[in-house]
Image 1: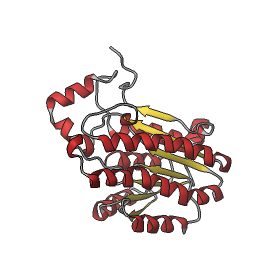
Image 2: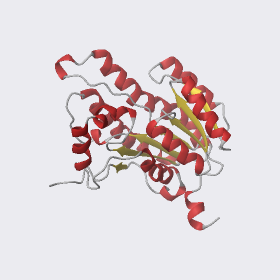
Image 3: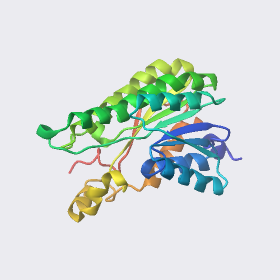
Image 4: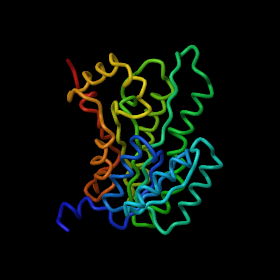
Length: 257
């Protein structure tokens, strides 16, 4: 194995990815698998989750699956217990998220609560409950998936922006609490990607073009564009990086005129 291969290798590591059966979570799961990790896929749609895990297994990749609605405290507790029963844990990717678009004056209270339960409460609870196992494993990496919405205001979606901003700051707090245990905590902040969550904008030619033109690279992100970022932050190559946000947005946040 070459120096670069060993630097980015995840051989022998165990990773958990939430929201793993589609979109960005699926792409990051595949990247971690191909880097050598065993990945525990977590998702709310049990059929889709198992079908995806079976497909990876048929390709000779090391994967398992646990169905869980992260908005349910009971199911979240069960998920944590199942993971804690394992011998080790090295990487936790808090990717699962929900978004609900409504005008502010009509924004439903249950949509606000659900957004925070899945996007903030679940990452907090998983980090809290699973970090002792990561410590026992010799340290590790927690990667929270935020958004350019953690930095910018977007209309008609107050819960999503507020939750992603909270998750960004939670990452810094966790990095401060877990650094002494050898656990690094960082964010990946995607821009606009071609996923189900952004399907309405992608299907509208005017919105699609406007969002592409808002980037410096002139295009939307593809899920595979996150592969390098997640493997980097999970690996020893990022061994002295913690409490940081890596935006994978095609230059959206950097663009001026």
